[in-house]
Length: 167
Image (cartoon, rainbow, N blue to C red; front, side):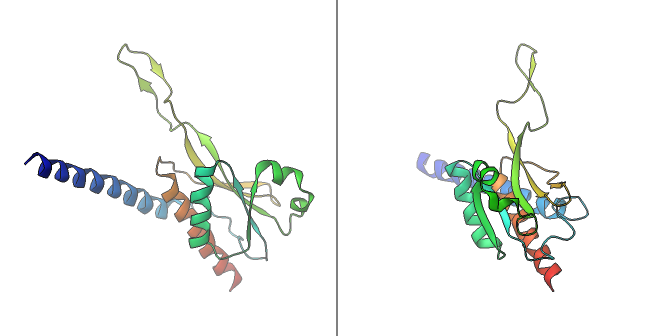
């Protein structure tokens, strides 16, 4: 009987976690739009190469997987240091757009048991696309600890916009 209840609890926890991820993906579909300021209106109109800034191994793993699955345009993966050092990236016609993220506070305070207010002990990722030619930054207006779900939707929406602007 104990074995059965452990299995039921495990199934419930798995279901709840999966539904949270699905909810994030659904909300991201509504928020990551041109109208909400997340997608550049002319993205993909010219033959540009989208630059994806890379960081740590765990982040890069999901980034590369999501790009491979959801983005069909020309793209390159580079570290921030390589991007700033390599002269080829000075070409704003070819490398006009940069996909990156900012690490930000989740936007709320934690109140400890003794009444002190403090920031959370973690940050979340807020994804951005920088148009280097126009000096404009387009950004996600949402964050979540399910950042890979947001990243998937954002990359997919960029690909859709690129294809729309090329037809």
